Image 1 (cartoon, rainbow, N blue to C red):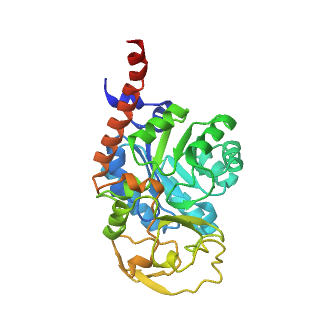
Image 2: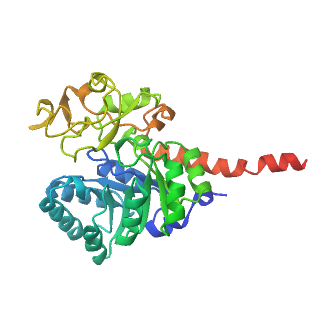
Image 3: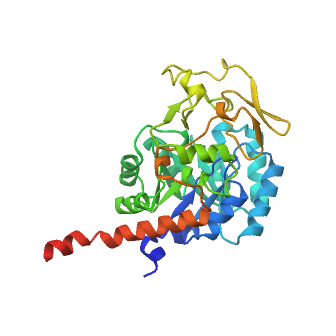
Length: 343
């Protein structure tokens, strides 16, 4: 039997993908090349366009549409975006024929309602049960339940599978598990739990197509997962208290264990790196991209606790194939103990 059929869930029909593996909308990293690779391999990608200029959204969406005919979402974050810019972003996406949006952080009902009126699907990533309920009430189609193991911005404090199970009991929407998942075994566990898929960030950051800097990718491959730190020190450009999970570096080591309580209004605005003429500041949320030069070590190198399972940088399509094969094998093996007992 085709291993894809063994792990297919109703979510695949809703989103128009072959397998329930979602690419997280990593800002700066999940550009058109990575999104196209995930889509063409049967997964479902979110194009990471957080706080990006509408002109860049136009070029990225058009490049993605030229590279694949498969569906995708655009990831925007209302809570971290100036309202005027957010309005322009949404207008541009709708003008380009974008059929789905992936939102994160606090639920903004009017934003959800706006894109729903235009017929778009809404996937909403949340970190608390309260936000999950708000997303469902606002009209979201899919809940992405993010656990504390996740890399990048982390909204909640529960472990991924425990949180997902709680959300499954409290909402009627399809639930996707996110946070520290980088293998097919993680996908099998999510499906066994009753979820309809997984969302991965770190596993796809360490791919050839990701727009992350090679040094960031290498740090993920070299991570054991235990060297990740949850902190709110990388908070410039985001609301106070917004936590991120990063691989420990000189910045986190200098905190002396005080990982929380940093006010973006009190942090110095010191340029340490550049993308062209655009300065990247110490303590900002900007991670090192292909185009970044400067003190890359001091920038946040995002990674989830599942980084220890990632041993090499691969094409995104191959990573999906490996996950599919491993997940399907888990369901094959699930009956073996019973058969053995019967003998």
